[in-house]
Length: 96
Image (tube, rainbow, N blue to C red; front, side, top):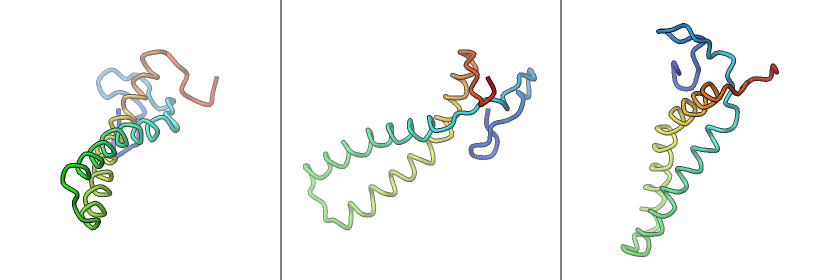
């Protein structure tokens, strides 16, 4: 459903179904933040309580992990939202 990083295709290459009118808006970033936060924060707290690493380790590891997870999950979340809009028949556009 996506070409490049986050740009949706206009039509399905196999069947020709139109996808260009679907707009996910703020749902994919919201879902990505929710998922990344639920992974990173418990891991951070667990590592801090168990190993007590120095601050520089936290400042190196957790932002990098957050960035990698965000880059990995954002296109998948956008594809999920676009698929959900399409499958439910929601307009997903400014046109009514």
